[in-house]
Length: 78
Ligand SMILES: [Zn+2]
Image 1 (cartoon, rainbow, N blue to C red):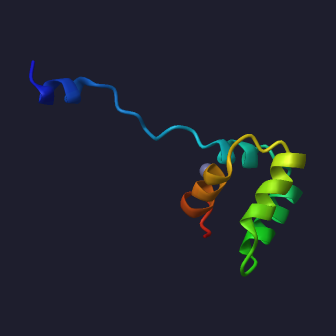
Image 2: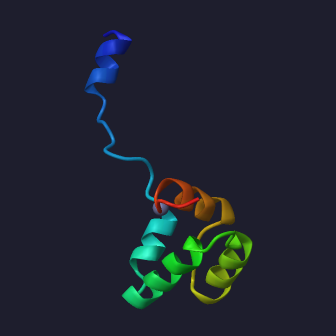
């Protein structure tokens, strides 16, 4: 079998690994989602502070870099 055949028969993933921040965000109430969106939409919002608050008090399960990645790639923000 050629590499080409092996690659062609390998199962394709529809998407990358699940984003912990997306999962966390999806579990928030609508009011909390709105508050999160409002915060990150502010000019010059402080991501480090956001991270500290949500990880200490809101059960955010992941690291700051995951939050950053999410904000840039999934949340339509910076
Ligand atoms: Zn995400």
